[in-house]
Image 1 (cartoon, rainbow, N blue to C red):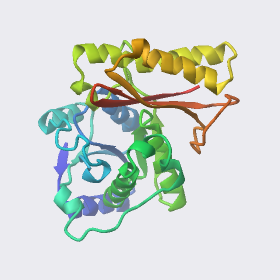
Image 2 (image 1 turned 90 degrees about the vertical axis):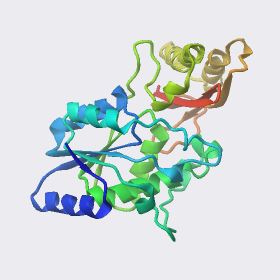
Image 3 (image 1 turned 60 degrees about the vertical axis):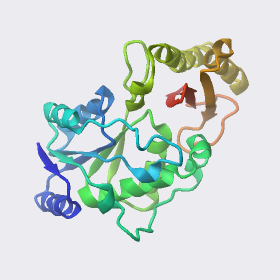
Image 4 (image 1 turned 180 degrees about the horizontal axis):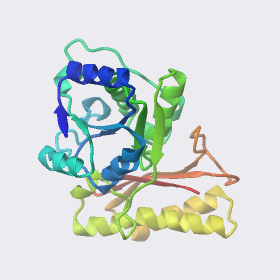
Length: 281
């Protein structure tokens, strides 16, 4: 596996692949890889001539007081994992080159970034769309793949690509979970043993909501009341709901009644760790 750090080297190599007619797939990550990330690599491997994984802890998507400085990092471990799943190139740009002095250009998607995570993290998606746009210009992929756990991010990137006529296919991959249902996340490492047990309430509440819908329940209020009861079990002070909402999966508009595929999106603080999860009911 080749490792590229310089932006101009990555761009020149990508242009060479394009001239050779190679199909390039990009899997953007912030590193500290887990099996969820690796599932993306394995999924796209047979669908591309060349697979590029990027590792970049993007400072512009972290707000004040968030965990940029303590975000988990282990590049040597990541390199081994990526080599084992057949990634061809690892692109590790540096923040000072991605955002040099006098940097002042951002990509902003408006409507779909405003609800859900956009309320508590108002600058987050501007950072996401800007860095993803830059990665697309640098790697020049034909295909890029993102996990569905960050569902709002996936919707936002698809909107950006469509609105700006970017020549890249965006693929989503289902959430990868532990055997007990916990969605894989790099931030799970922050959880104590007891907090990890409490974090299972996210997937348990999704299961309960799905069960209600299968039994014929269509009222959003009834479904969300049950979800919040499970999340806030025993009024636990260590668990704080950021949001639990029903949304239309493509527009992210609020849904009051389940009349078709409906996104149930969750963001919950377990201690100081913010976890997200979702399911399309």
